[in-house]
Amino acid sequence: MPGFVDMHCHLREPGQEYKEDIASGTLAAAFGGFTAVACMPNTIPVNDNEMVTRFIIDKAKEGASTRVYPVAAITKGLKGEELTEFGILKENGAIAFSDDGRPVEDANRMRLALQYAKGFDALLISHCEELSLVGEGVMNEGTTSALYGLKGISRAAEEVMLSRELLLAESLNTKVHIAHISTWGGVELLRQAKARGVRATGETCPHYFSATDELCMDYDANAKMNPPLRTARDVEAIKRGLADGTIDAIATDHAPHSKDEKRIEFQNAPNGIIGFETAFSLAVTNLIETGILTPQQLVERMSCRPAEILGVSGGIVAKGFSADLTIADPNAVMTYNEENLHSKSANSPFLNKKYKGKVVCTIMDGIVRAKR
Ligand SMILES: [Zn+2]
Ligand SMILES: [Zn+2]
Image (tube, rainbow, N blue to C red; front, side, top):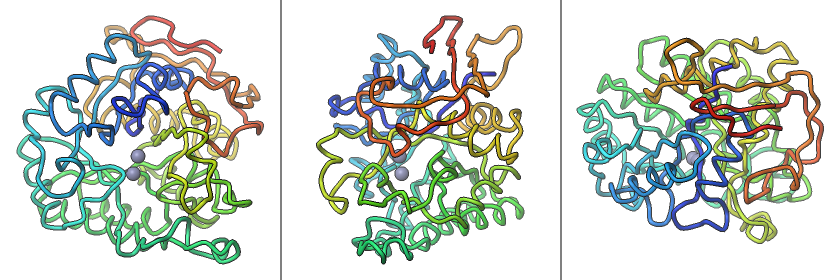
């Protein structure tokens, strides 16, 4: 297959190298079949100026196992106030813009950002979360949160913001990309928007088509993420959205955290799970084996569409193009554990379970980068 392109991950460098760095993160990505990754700007310092963008690109040149495309912040310090210099950042290699981890709370600021981005033909990626509706919620709001006595996050918290972004993009006739869609309503909103010609695209993550909020059982903080795992109805809708193309891409939202950070009580643990190495197996197990997607469609969602949306090369196996290739065995049974993962972190609820499908070898730019 053409190498997978992950349009949403967190490599944690600069600033949090104890969780992950560019070398370890991209090695894990290569073992997951990815030949290119786009990394979010919530590093320390934030990637909101060309110095940080250049640092990431230079670091990647030194020792990355995949192509690395930095996503720069929409607002300085991810504070939701002053916009960053889209033009300069883009010139220095920023592939897109996002305040991921946070929404741009102020609607008019987001409108100005979209308008400003349009002038540079820059892509904005929105982390959709209406914070006033999230409140102190820590997992999906429903019977499971009630059972565990944890504060819930309603689907509306995601969908209200998602609607806002679609309406703003529509009114400005500009593009917008919706990150990590997790709800059935979110899929439906994007489907309707696309049907009336809104230039919106969307991604989901392997966990949203593989698991429900019941994974938070026993208060396992390795199942805590944002947006949270939802319900069976949402999982079904995400799968349908992937099948009919409403959801363009599968991105990992690989978000490493140390053991100590995740070992505390559920309410206080940080959000996020690692995702590079398990992505293909979860996709084969939950999408291919179940007949939701054909292998060709999976390649579109994991390689062709994300490359297209980001405007980078990829998603193609042909003479004259660089050899970015993934070789996989769809019938192999694979179990992931701390010992065979290449990330510095192991925060995942998908370890020590059997899955169908295994990435055997990843080649980037004609060189073998990972072999299992
Ligand atoms: Zn996010
Ligand atoms: Zn993210």
